[in-house]
Amino acid sequence: METWNEFFDKERELPYYQQMHAKVMEEYKDRVIYPPYHDILNAFKLTPLKSANVIIIGQDPYHEKGQAMGLAFSVPKDKELPPSLKNIYQEIGNEYHQEVNQDGDLTYLAKQGVLLLNRTLTVREHQANSHQDYGYDILLMHVMEVLNKEESPKVFLLWGSFAISLRKYITNPKHLILTSPHPSPLSAYRGFFGNNHFVKANEFLRKNNLTEIKWIKKDYLAGQ
Image (cartoon, rainbow, N blue to C red):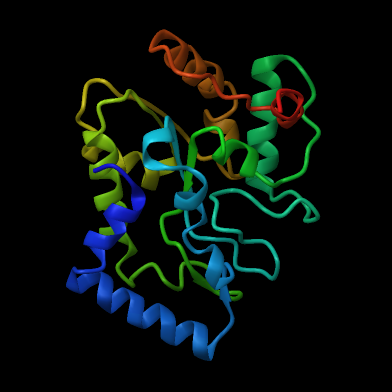
């Protein structure tokens, strides 16, 4: 598999995908659905398969107006930081010993090879998990299988019970799996804080002659 376009060309031929697509299209016609339709596949557009060196799994998209943008944990720069993202930034700051004061748009990470993938790609306004039975579980399983087959070493950051349940699809010994509780306020103090995942991910990338991630946006922008 060379590109996400090739992957989706194959998926679109499968009955589950066709049924899922039909359901989602009906929802967009009749209801308010997030993210905006053109952003559903944003994670795949911004992070090509061959560039995806770090994979982070979120849950479903934010379900309030103007938040979801097709990237796990990310919100547009003019939006208030969601609690889980605040905790992610806090952990990055603790690991790199500096204050992280930045907006919530994680496009800068996606462009560096961090695949920010949600469990489901769409959600009904005000209704968390409203599309979780539409077939996205099959899509995510297939995505994980494709990533697992890649020969280039990857880091999988699996936070929380659902993300950790996906480790069964990661059997390639070239890849690194890091697990911890989810960064949400309900669980961050049970082991997300102090997990050192961002430093560990970069250590692994460096050892494998891959470009390290600039987790802090001002560092990324300084190199542009």
